[in-house]
Amino acid sequence: MKQSNFTQKIEGFLEAVKTVWNQGVFGIDIGSILVAAGIIVFFILFRKIIFKFIINRINNFAQKTENKIDDEVVKSLEKPVSYVPVVFGFYIARQYLTLTETVGAAADKLISSAIVFVLFWAFYNLVEAFAWILEKLENIFDKSLIDWLKKLIKGTFVFIGFATILELWGIRIGPIIAGLGLFGVAVALGAQDLFKNLISGILILAEQRFSIGDWIKVEGVVEGTVESIGFRSTKIRRFDKAPVFVPNSRLSDNSVINFSEMTFRRISWMIGLKYDTKIEQLKTVRNQIEGYLLNSPDFVNPPEAPLFVRVDKFNDSSIDLMIYCFTRTIVWKEWLEIKENFALEIKNIVENSGTDFAFPSQSLYVEHLPDGEFK
Image (cartoon, rainbow, N blue to C red; front, top):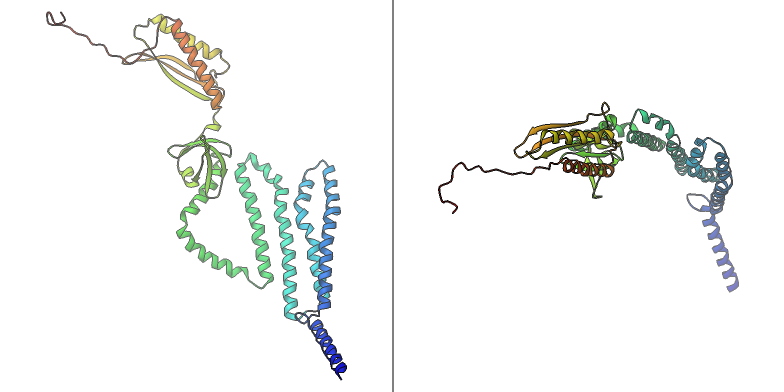
């Protein structure tokens, strides 16, 4: 009797296991689920095989060609293509399973979304591969503007891919865009500075006021080297290495001096000589300074750039000699060295001519002193 009860319990347990096995999840028996999971695992492992052999062989073949475009295309498509077997594995597993209408529809949408994601991921990566087409426009547009165009194209692919996935799930993108338009009007009223800076950044790039790496100065704002031009602000590295983030509107509305666009660098001095300097000494000093400038390869001669060495005016304490010239280098360090050597040469010329530099002074003339005043 006891043996019979125990057998009945075993049979009841096995029947319960069978029921659970057959019912499974969402009406799918566990056996089918395990087979589907095995299919997915197989294709995941197969993905590694594809990536290791097929992609590597294609990459090696592309490297042997002289054209570098195919190298960039293969490199861009490596990761998206490597996930194609995974998506295909889910598709095969879905076909194997017998799902209810609701669950089946959701599974189909998930697989379709994965296909769209991989497809637009490939498009997104291909932008960099075909960036050479945009780079040919560098003669017309600034490099920073071309970088913006690449970001815009990438953003377009992201938007289209996202909108496609939403449409697959029955979410219409049109009403969302219309709602965002009304929302955008409200946001625009409170974010005028943001849009002003964005438009200013586009104008800066379109006008080619400066480029990355240029040395610029905005009076009362900043002076330094441009490191990046963003949508809202421009990063400028000062000469003390401190970064300054300047809103684009300030760079667009103010005068910008671009020292990197200089053809030559100017030296403008006023040299004061003593009033007891003779006319011949003045001429000697003037002629020797001018001769030094004309014969030195560091300075630009007319008509490339103006060069003047002239007695300019009679100042309160000196006879002023104007020097106006340009150096060929625009590099600050080299310019300072040339200017220093020029200053030393001027001092040598003045001293050898028998005169000297003037300094501020006052003369007091006394017409009459009382008798015995200084006795």
